[in-house]
Amino acid sequence: MPIATSPKLKVAIVGAGPGGLATTIQFRRLDNVEVQVFDQARELREVGAGISINDNTWRLLQDLEAADALEQFTSRSEKGVVDSQHRNGRTGELLAESVHTGHTDKPPRSRIERYKLQNALLSRLPKGLIQLSKKLASIAETDKGVFLTFTDSITAGPFDLVVGADGIRSAVRQHIFPDHHLSYTGKVAYRVLIPQEKVAHIPDVPKASVFWHTPTTHVYTCPLDNGLFEIATRAIEDEEYGSKVSWGRTVTKDRVVPHYEGYCDTIRAVIDAPDEWLEFAIFGGPRLLGSVTSNGRIVLIGDAAHPLSGAFGSGAAFAFEDAYILKHALEYAQEKGKSTTYALDLFDSIRSPRYEGLYEVLDRGLDNVKDVKSQTLPPDEHVSEVIKRNWKGGEEGGWIYGYNIKDVWAERKAVEDAKLAKVPLPTVSHAEQVATVTVSA
Image 1 (cartoon, rainbow, N blue to C red):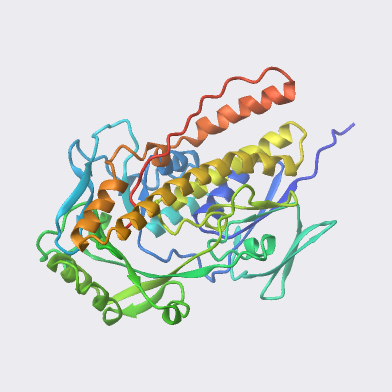
Image 2 (cartoon, rainbow, N blue to C red):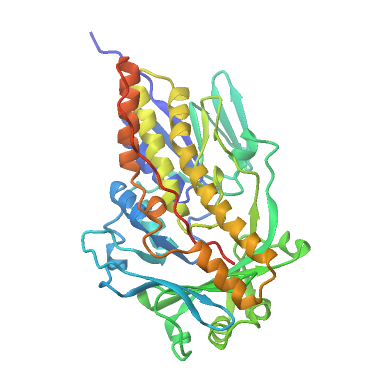
């Protein structure tokens, strides 16, 4: 007599950025899960410049079996080589710096082009899996499951679970939280990659990741692999202009250069080097604390759940962590005969404290900025005081960048096992010390 098998859980993943791709890779490892992936783009391409690869990013890339594809673009620098700096953008004065530890057994800390990360993840998936030109128009939750309707009038479903990995402008989030609205922050980012030879003639450009600060804006510079140079900036733009900026619109240098006339000669020369830039209006919204799930069948991950506006430069890693826990929570629920609702509640209870801790770091840094501003110090003293308060060196970010999601899951699984077995719970001592990180002056 044939053995009865449970029907496969049908999952839709909306969004094929780093978080969506990582979730797809994780879910395809589950035998009784069937995945469909949708993205609104006509072709998959990363818009932006560089992306940081830290300890937590690298650890999860290894778990996703995508690290080997990036190894050629990373390096383990010798001990004492400068890794990152913070400088006064007006004078060029060095305010703080960190150096490489030289540990050969630690993952490389580096910054690579975003498309290389995307390609490394795509290499782990079969071609044709991702359905493109699928911009989500509406979601319908019915007794049969969740149906997705796209702007091309095609409807997909029913699905047992929908994962919203569709970024800061998430349509899935808008369905779950219709009262959640993004608003323009008053700042626009300008980003570009250019050949290093275009800045080679400029004196005093450090070969490191450098933030050049003023009291209101900053410029970030960093040499990348393959002879490229990254520039990423913040600029203040009025509401009327910012609300009209499309994501990744190309603008000429005339739009960018005037914002940085008050910077030192080095930065003004760097800003003048590119002929064109990509422009991004920065939006934010109310924080989603506690739960990012709905009705046991919809869940948000990455920027769709917790947009951090690039505050920690590690958004991809946070989304990878989400994907890892979501997969393991779902797998655990299925093994224990529990519902998808149980899995999503478990996911919420693990990930919410992580993001709450990140928000605490961000809030403390912003409070420092406000306090310094209230003192009406001269611009150079203002910048120095903010960096002094918000940046303590290269090792303080262990809780953020060295976070080991595998250990977190192992500890939580032991707790859940004990609960289900109705035995005394083990003592959990996973204390997380919230570190202080840089918040732009």
